[in-house]
Image 1 (cartoon, rainbow, N blue to C red):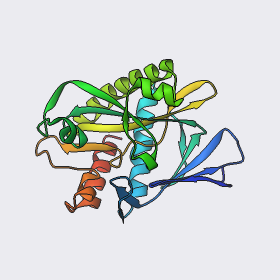
Image 2 (tube, rainbow, N blue to C red; image 1 turned 180 degrees about the horizontal axis):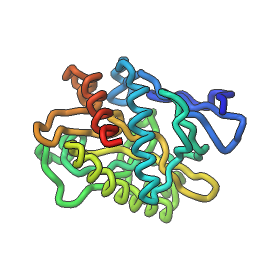
Image 3 (cartoon, rainbow, N blue to C red; image 1 turned 90 degrees about the horizontal axis):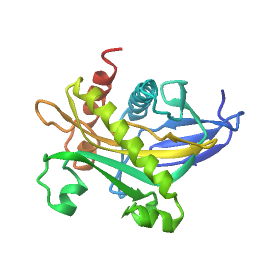
Length: 236
C-alpha cells in the first residue's frame, strides 16, 4: 500500500490517501505542541514511539471487541488505517485529577476519582477545543444523541481495558483523550493512544511520563516516552 495525496497534516501526524479509497496511511511526526499550538518543539523519535504504542494498544482493544481504525503497522512511522469521517468531538476520560480538572474545579492534583469522569470537547483549534455537553454537540450538528451515547460508552469500555493493562506495567492511567469516526455505518476509534494523548504516572513514584514533561519543561521527555514504550511492549 502506497501513499498518494496528502489528505491532512495536524500537529502530530500526516494522513495520506492510498490507492484504496477505504484506507489511509497515518504518518507519525516528531513535532510536539502544547497549549493548543502555542508552544512548539520536537521530541526525538516521538513518531516512532507513538506509532509503536498506538499499534499495540489498538490491537489490544480489537482483541477485546472494541473496533478501531487500525489495519496494520506498515513501518516505524506509518500505520495503515480505515478511512474515517472524523466526529468533531474529543472524548476525555479522567481517573485521577490533573490538568484542567484541577484548574477548573479545584480538585487537589492526584485525587483518585471515585468514578471516572467522561468529558466532551468540541474538536476545533480555532476555538481552543472548548468543553461542551450533549446539547451543544447536537445543536452544532457534530453528532447525534445516539452517537454521543456510543462515544461515552465506548470510552468507558476502553478505560476499563487500558487501566488494567497499564497497572500491570506499573503505570497509572491518569486521563486520556479519544477521537472517533464513522466508517461504513460504524463508529470506530481513531487517532492514536500514546504519551501525547494520555497522562501516565509511575505507579510507585508518581513521576510524570507523558507530554506534561514537554508542556512544563520538566526535562527527560524522550526518556519518559521511551520508558512508556518499553513497558507497553515488554510482555510481547
